[in-house]
Image (cartoon, rainbow, N blue to C red; front, side):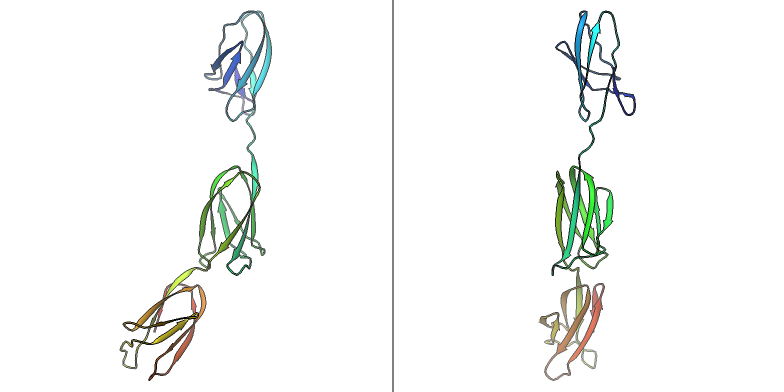
Length: 219
């Protein structure tokens, strides 16, 4: 009779080896026909430590062997989260294996997990682009992750005093210069403050600073 030691539950599917015979337990039990004498018993089951016993058999007899589950192997997974310039990102939310932790002022989050393959996600509420990836955790691991600024769509429209679209206006945003076509041009910009400058011969120049937190259109 094979029992799970912690729960005292009967274990089915355990392999029992006695006198060269192997049987699997059903509802915790495996029956053998053996000659009288001393016999060694070996019990094994995936996910459990092996169990052994020696029995002196003189008549019909039940032998109970208790086996313990193998403790899962755990490792520490440490994330070091930085932005592209190398500065640590504080307050990023790291989610992996059902656990969630925020990075410290040093950009670090450490979690203890059972050895396995995991999908992790690092998010910042929109300040940076969310990162999702997988890792096969089979040892203590330090994982460096670089976040990129979230990219937003900035549409710049150019109109004259009569609200008519003006083509060929030179618009500069974040070091990139484009000409308007159909009275507008579109930039991909990071979330945050950005300077917009517009000029064209024959017209007065204009500039403004925007705090871009979502896709935005300005005129």
